[in-house]
Image 1 (tube, rainbow, N blue to C red):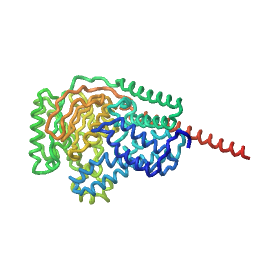
Image 2 (image 1 turned 60 degrees about the horizontal axis):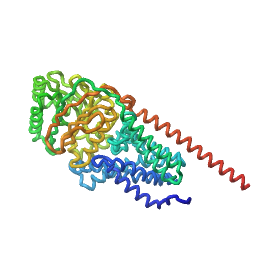
Image 3 (image 1 turned 90 degrees about the horizontal axis):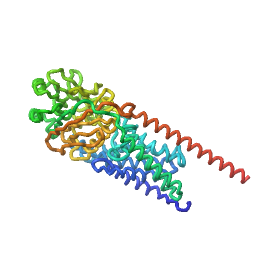
Image 4 (image 1 turned 45 degrees about the vertical axis):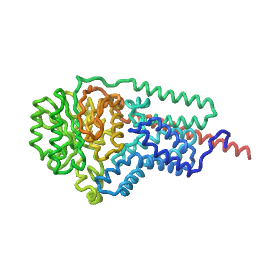
Length: 517
């Protein structure tokens, strides 16, 4: 061992360290929002992995970290499974563990690829690229699961300034890059040039991010739009109780009637009306007449029955004009639809009778609102940047989401979702309004700042005004393409650096062999 080098701990100790680091990963996200912790935890994991020469052991470190991170950070899923799928806690936690194991494949693969194909400094260059590419793939494969992606930790931090240019994956790449630079500086801490170069690289990354944040790609479009976001706080046990439907409808109608006179848009949460529109034609007709009389547009979460398909939908009432619809496209597997129905339908219906019967919508992704365009998403669609972009590509001047997080009780799920929504606003530089059943109902500025919100688990109305914004950010126009091109360039540099290192080693070996001969 060279003088001053850090001693590498025993592998079992490193596995335990990776487990602890992963378990702390959710603390970097909302509601805790300890954003510097994300860099510190990645620094710890990357330091452990970069010293490992066996790909399988590096993969094990990534798997243990990922399993602990997702088991701790998405444990709110167990609440739904226990409370509404009639699973006992052991089975519900087992399902979460299975999901965590599946998600852990991506960080494990990232570390395996890094160790298997790269050496020396090339490994450190490739490490953050492959780490974030794993997150990008996780959000796309098998319907996608974007939770706990690195970039979201920096939504309200300096590196978040890159969001409108490179999206949250670009932000994540910068975050992981900072962690790798710190690892490199620690490993070469006795070299003054390395330390100075590392500090310069860190200053450059943060300087670029701060400069990027100062650029405005969107501009005000039209006048302020006054909105009322209704939070009904209806318990799930009542919402789907046939005997409570009439009370729920009256509850929301009462909230509608009590909105301020100058409100232009009233938004109700996802499935606020827990019946098909075909079952309440009289109520819809009354709301249409009221909308025309008071010059207010209503957007209501209500399941749609088209006669041959069912949709989780948003219905727009604009006076006596024909009803307009947004039909949710990105459905929740095992909740709104059943993958491989021939194999799994009977099992799913054993726990959740009647669920899994929604069809996927196919646009349009905007609805006209008093001369503006609302880019609409329902529930966790807002967690997928590519779903939000569909509305922006159709000219949305503001974002709108309706959700119901009552399924997850008093957990961190709603706060995580709000943080992801703030990143969407930051990426697109558009205001975002969110109406939810039990919270968090909020208004988010084009800079990703939560301007106003209602407390959770209360009945209330959030009355605010937003400024619609026209124009596109680089991310809004090209999506993940700039981030992917940057990742490709960095990977090619890592490949060339690794080959040069391997070639240099071979020449040294041949030279020493020749001298011995």
